Length: 412
Image (cartoon, rainbow, N blue to C red):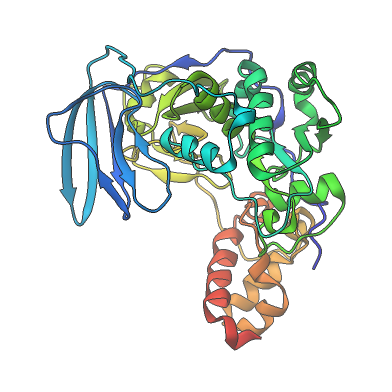
């Protein structure tokens, strides 16, 4: 099995994003679920500011911070604890949010890690092997998303500054900013911010989806193959997002907590808008950003057209939310039997044979699907998007992958 980047598909979203500056969005409230291993740091009725701690971890995870100022309420439901903050629209910033007093070059890795955790950022892992090169992922992760593009255009210096900080944190001697070819303007802007091109280089990569996937990115840049079941950081090529780099610089150099991110909100096939949205914002509050909907959209999707998750709008934004797509009408897909056209195999970036895996999975022949490397599926959804029969190959293969990896030793 090879995973050198040869497959993938071209999507409209890889065209340069509309030149619209991201606008701040102020929700009426945010709701933050508190995971296990965290303890709530606020009480019902407390007044908090932007950047104040909502919950803290005892296990080395980043603090959960409020992205708005307002009044707190704490609730429990079916074993899940959550904190809601009602916005007072004063935009008060916590006194705790201040830049580091020391020069970043004077700080140890432990100091940098502690500072990032306090500002709500999970530092990336260096992996089991000393980094050969740090890769800054400047590719869009979803169709119809332009949030990364807007981050690069609006926070060019912050992305490069954050990259330097992460190089020090991970012990990487060099870094590459991987920018899709259609985003050449972003590449030019980044290049102008680099003082030492021997440490940080700009590389243009294919605009095909799923170029953003770490294994595909490493393959494209270095023409090497890393087993999809092995993290790229363990092979010496840690991949971090441009959005994370900007957040790291803002947190340490400017004292800005990581409590919001740029999200693309659009109707399908209609020009999008980009908004800086606090984490924990209910999706329903973002619907009016796409115009006057007399009725609720028939379909609301978090993420791209290919791998996004459908929602009723009650979900809340998270750090990995990059796009919200609204549709006035649901598309009816007419399912047909597999046509054996081979399009799915041509599109698969890890050179699997999705149609065969689909057929043997339907027959319950897990031994054959194991030999067909179903466990190496990267869940990009290219196979489903090109299937003329409308078969959701991605869902079937992921189910088969879960079965195989769950049985582990039985397939050695």
